[in-house]
Image (cartoon, rainbow, N blue to C red; front, side, top):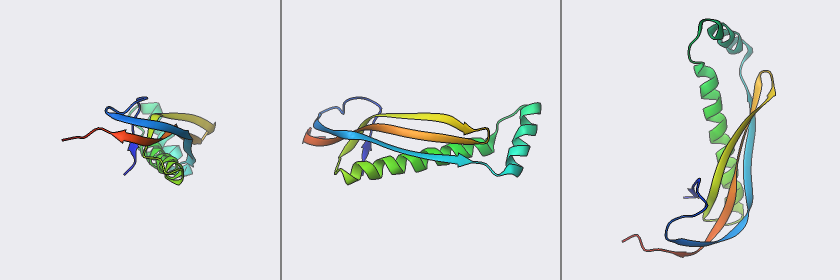
Length: 110
C-alpha cells in the first residue's frame, strides 16, 4: 500500500528522495450530458455529471502517479498536489504530482 501525503514529511519516518512522479488524464463529457449541464447552469444547481467526471479523473491520475512511484520502488509520495485545467471548452485535464521517496527508517507504531 503506497502512502500518499500532502505534507513534506511523514511523522517518525526518515526517507531519501527518489524523483518527481506524476499522473494525468484528459476527460470530456458526452455531448447530451453537456447540453443538460448547460441548461442547469441557467437555472442553477449542482453539475453532478461534471463532479463525477472530475472525481473519476482524479482517481485515474492518482493511479497513474502511484504506478510511476511503484516503478521506482518508492514507499510513499509526499507533497501530493492536484491541478485541473480546461483543455477545450468541453474537456479538462487533471494532473497529480508529488515526490516519490524510499523509507530509510520507520518509527515503531506500538
